Image 1 (cartoon, rainbow, N blue to C red):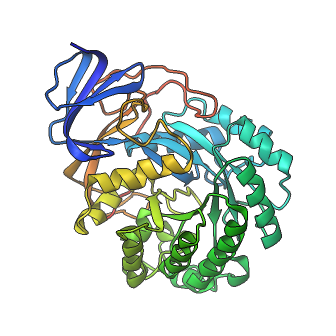
Image 2 (cartoon, helix red, strand yellow):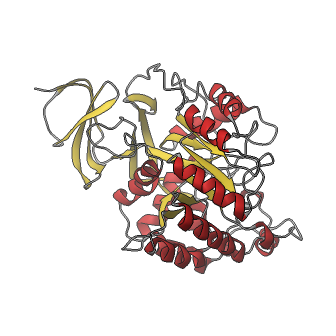
Image 3 (tube, one colour):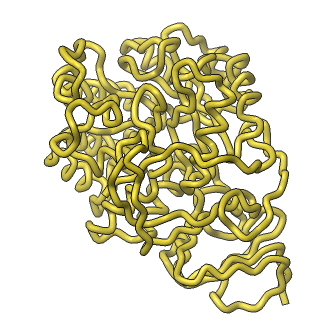
Length: 439
């Protein structure tokens, strides 16, 4: 009879083959078997989730952790705590942040600040107009899993936007490093200063054509350089055809959107609400429906993944509700838990070359999430995020990182040193973060 450290059973396990009853055997932090739901085995911990689903831990690409004026360590503590409670086991952090992730010194400062984070932490190095090939190679060697840049103001105060010549040069350098590039694609030349403080003013100042122009620039550069490119966040559905055409011609370019763009059309939120202010802005109901069409395209969808778009202090504070908000909208469109796992875990892991994450399969890390798809939860009216006062479907009831209980599980948490690049150390208990959900 096989022996495991832990066995987790569920009638709804999201494996690469689909959602099915299964038992997951875990030893030394890794998944060693995925078998029949009732498969015998001896384990120190045997957890039966019943109808609560078991999903792979989320990999949240392009998340920010630091609000303006906030200590960096405090930002990591608060964001990582919210992340594990929301089913995100790996945070992939990008700008804006201080110090900027433009060199090895900045990366080491973030590693130190994230050392006790409850979630795993990985980093996207910042590409600016001043970045040299040596800077990029140094960041890659120090552990950056990819890179981030902006064509406008989406990279933070210390990371200048790229023009076409520097964009092409950076892409060729990153192709040689076999590193993906995540791009905030709004074109600065198409943006203007908002003539007011509301969402309608922001929509006028940041129109969809800014994103389209930026995507066209990306496509032209990516076809020459052969770099893996992710547009994030992708909000203007009219750009999907541009990306589809580029992919058909062999460009390795895809997109990531966020639950708030899929859930919250601009017409249905208060115009003067700071909780709904983000860059790019929320767009119309028809645009939201078209985003869903791009995500659900039956053949080679251009939107391949969904991330929180978490930007505390400068955008939406939404990481606490990513999975529930997405599930609330997705199930209405006939999607299942396998779709949820693919968008939030498998696709981002594959983009970043994290072969041991994002899947429930033998040989993968035991980063797992217990998710009750039938539960409902009311977002407090005082929540600072975009879902305040709404009722969301689905609830995270437990999170494991490398087989150790990080949140809500019956298993004891374990102090396990993580690799320097992943950040993270002991899985300390921490207070509930401020959070928010949608309907």
